[in-house]
Image 1: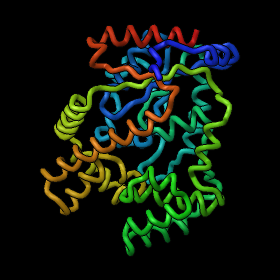
Image 2 (image 1 turned 45 degrees about the vertical axis):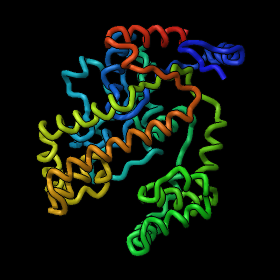
Image 3 (image 1 turned 45 degrees about the horizontal axis):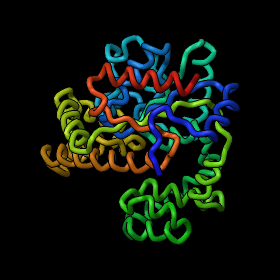
Length: 332
């Protein structure tokens, strides 16, 4: 099947677009970590009169600045950024809370006559906004979660993953056995709702879209992306990542909620004396590359996303010109 060119729509999509004209517009920018989403989103916001709504599950936490690569005030160039620094590192925050805040924020941006630009690499957060997907958080069972964590520790992650495979094979195939946190969450969803997570996702995929969207996926050749990841980690280290993690651990203990964030768990292990500094940095680079690969896998499943290779579109100004033209066409 011929791949759809940027801006190209078929007859069915044209009919759908006509029906969506009464919906509020939303630009969505996704892609793997370190691809350049933040810079692109800011430049497009300047050109289109937009404001950025961040879709990053770790940038919501206060104090996690260097490791999550939050844009500085200077880098934001005056563009308002929303849903950054809204939660303390020891507080629980989930996709249900994010969904509610994101919809409220997008509505506020529209009321100001601005264009909301949803930008980030947390696929579940993006899906929650676009497809009304929602974890049934009202039924969260923290006692069950603690029991599952204990089982994972005593019996191993593979045993827990096999338990998930028995009740939700589709989700089990998607999750790595070592991704214990998400494996536990998937089991919890089944136990508290009686339906597997994959069924929730399937239902969400049939929901009526709330917004008229232009969805952009940013990519680069894998060797280039991996080089950018390695360079970013080096920059984070030089910018004081170790000191940031040490300060957070002193203030909040062992980062009980946000400790799964890339950069924090690796550096925390070094600060606890569990590994060497060199090994911690090596693991951070490796884990970030693996995370980027998982992000690609997640976003590639969404046929609504039109992908743009930033290397092929270089230089940067030309890339933004093309992306701006694409957005104007999609939302016109």
